[in-house]
Length: 113
Length: 117
Image (cartoon, rainbow over all chains, first blue to last red):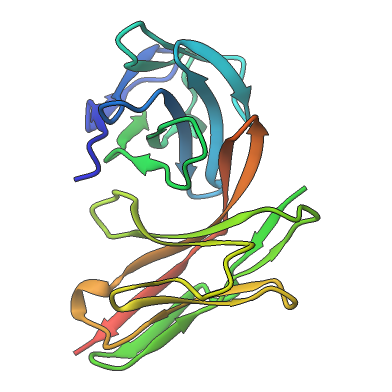
């Protein structure tokens, strides 16, 4: 158990809908990273938050947004969902300093029908 | 831009034998880090081992070791005494700086390892 929690574990929704994925980092970790794993794109970095502030963006679509709250949990919001958004979404956390490890949560498997 | 290449889409190994999973990388940075993660069929990403570019010794963690050849830009994972539970997808990843001392991970496409009894 990495100490990172993600809910829900599975999510099935229809095209055009909006969903919210939730992540709680390890105790003490200030950085949260979101990754998307799909069959065609592999594992890709989406966005990073550090202590409530957005710090870096990767290959994140404009339909996607995220935030990190004062208690350091993070939410990834996906809107106007398309079939191609079906993927496994991972949250990872790290201390945010000179730390070599990112600890991954179990992931949320999103299926868009 | 950094790039991770895993040339073996799938590998088979007999139980109790050793197996090497290949990873080559491309970077112009002098300071970088390389990771291996295991992803079983259940989907979670499990950290296995880390090698820093300035580490003089090859990293080892139990049955896992990393064969780091800096000049060749390779960071192969060696699993000794394979077990049935080692059957999984294995990803090589590189640490890429984002800002300050924070970084993102850039992943290879993975190698699916199957351990046969």
